[in-house]
Image (cartoon, rainbow, N blue to C red; front, side, top):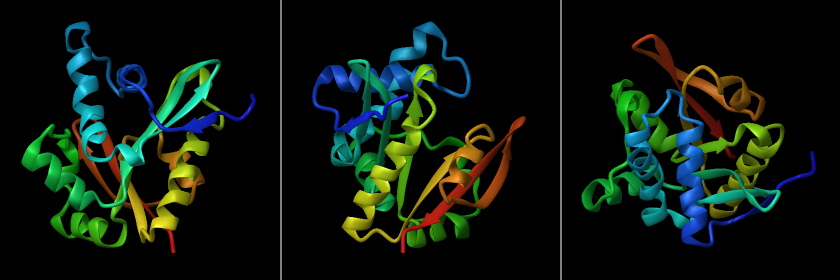
Length: 181
């Protein structure tokens, strides 16, 4: 499969496609009546508070995948919690306070990456590598991600390491981090 074309969301339609992919790739099926709200909950905080850290991978003339994130999770969460829209934090807040503080200090950037099933096989890696290169250029010390069990292998292959794990109902949630220095 040829390499994706990486760039930034440029239009309202691009952001709409990010929301669609977010729903398509959710860990659990999203009910039809909740799809729009679910997509907005996860994507719109990044559109408002960190649009310069959003990336899209284009293939076949459409958005095949995306990465949203930021260089400073502390600033991102402070802005979004104070002014909205508020991102969904859920199980992440159940991690010990010491681990969350370590993430903000040593791995201050964070990301979410999702790729349509038909375009997997290099697209996610390309998005993460581009994000990491831009983070390094900005001087970020490291980045973290929270995820379920399914994508852990993907992140480990990219050099992340497990920093914590908790049980959230029947499924584990992982805190992974990667130093950029």
